[in-house]
Structure formats: structure tokens, C-alpha cells
Amino acid sequence: MKQKAGGEMDIRVLNYFLMVAREENITRASQLLHITQPTLSRQLMQLEEELGVKLFQRSNHSIYLTNDGLLFRRRAQEIVNLADKAQAELKQDTDVLSGNIAIGCGEMRSAQEIAKLITDFQNIYPFVQFELYSGNNENIKERMEQGTLDLGLLLEPVNVVKYDFIRMRTKEQWGVLIHKDNPLSKKQVIYPGELVGTKVITIHLDTPVHHELASWSGDFAKEMESCANYNLLYNAVIVAKEKKGAVICVKLDNYYDDMKFIPFEPKLELTSVLAWKDRQSYSKATNTFISFIKDRYKHNQNRNSIFVFLLIQHKH
Image (tube, rainbow, N blue to C red):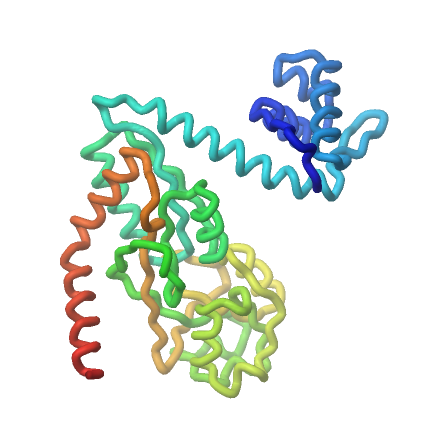
């Protein structure tokens, strides 16, 4: 996808493109944008010419994205979101702390700690709004790099070299959500090897957390039948119900019909961190929130620092 030398991409035109992509109809999109249909069509043609690719496939009554259009829509949405976020931050009242703070959260019980932090912070600064995004470590870190998320709740082990962070107090207990008709549902704990022969749905492969799970399973990991991978639990549970199988996951306080959570034995518990990019410029609201959580968790951080110091001394 090539852009003409010297070409400028207008946020307004990106919004036009996104509206047409959503509505799949030029007439309806022009009405919602309050511009004429010929003007909208001309802007889209100029955008395609500027990029050097065909973004839309046109028919008599509809307009659809091409493969290049689908790729460009993702990037265009990221640019528009980032522009909106920057505009909102620049408009913040200097006397009253306000603005939006975007946090990415994995599906973990430690999200309850985030909820408590948000509630307590908004009791002090009621004009600050929070945007929550659900995803796995990879989704959240990608958006933090793009600047569309300010902070991310990440499940350890995770590479946080480029981040500052505080460690959450909640430990995430791993096990399986298993269908009630599966014979293993009668067990109180699951030992390595007992999932062999059961259709298993697990988190995405080639991630540090997945390697931790494979280490727990030992030699049995190669014998387990993985029928799907997931990044959010809800859809994985639907597949597991259909196959009467099991989802490898952390324990949540949610209830799923016909499914039972059984913990691993030996116990597998992982921690999580609330992270933000080191040496990054943030809005006043985000900086205030970061200072707030640092102060709230300073006892935890001091304890972690002492532990690391003692560990280093022991090695020497």
C-alpha cells in the first residue's frame, strides 16, 4: 500500500471512509455525515488515488471493502481514535481535573482491584472518565504501543522491560472450566495428564503464559488435544459446551450454565501487573491516576523491592 509523495491524510476524510465502511451505502453515509453524495464519492476516490489502492468494491446498491480496504479500516480507526483522545486531552479544564483514561484489562479476578481503584479515584476526581478495553496481553500491549491505551492489566509472566508497573495483590488461580457431562467434572482437582483425551480449549500458543501452562503439564502437554485457542473466555465457553470439553483458564467469579471450575493440582497461581509505558508523556488525568495507584500500592512495591534485594544477596 503506497501513499503518494507529499500526500496528506485528513482526519475528516478518514471519518468519511469509516462511515461508508460501516454503512456500506454511499447515500446513507452522506446523509449521516451531512454532506452531498457527489462530495463524498469524490473524497473517497481521491483517498484511493492518494493511497494507490482500491479500497471499495462497488455494486448497484452497496459498497464493500476490498482486502486492502479492510486492512486500511483498522489503521484508520486507530488514527481517528488517537486524534480524538489527543483532542480531548488538550481541551481539559486547567482548574478541574477531567479527561479520559483508557485501561486494557484481561479476564482476571485482579480486575476487581482496578474497579476499586477507579471508584476511589472518581470519588476524588468525579469529572475523570475511564474507558475499559477487554483483551489478552498481546492485544493490550499492542494498543499501549499505539497510544490508544494508557495502562494495561497484564497477566504474568510478561515482558515489562519498556514499562513501569505495580503488581496486583490478587493471585490468579489456574484450572479448567469443564462441562458437567464430562467424567472429569466429578473431580475436585485436575492433575497433569488427566486432560489427555478431553477436547481442550486454551489461550493462544507461543505466549509466555502458555509456556507456563505447558510447563505445568510436563510431558503430557504434547498428548493433549487442543481443538481451539481463545483470547476472551465467553466464546471459549460456548465452544466447550458444544463439545462437552474443557477450557483452560483462570478462576473468575462468573457462573456458566453446565460448566464447573476445577483447579489444577499442583496448584498453579500467577500474578498480574498494572503497567504503563515508561518515559511516556501522559495527560494530567492519567499522570494523577498513576500517582494515585503508586501511592495506594507503595507497600506492595517496597515489599517486592526488598524481596528482589534479598534474592540478589542470596545469589552472591
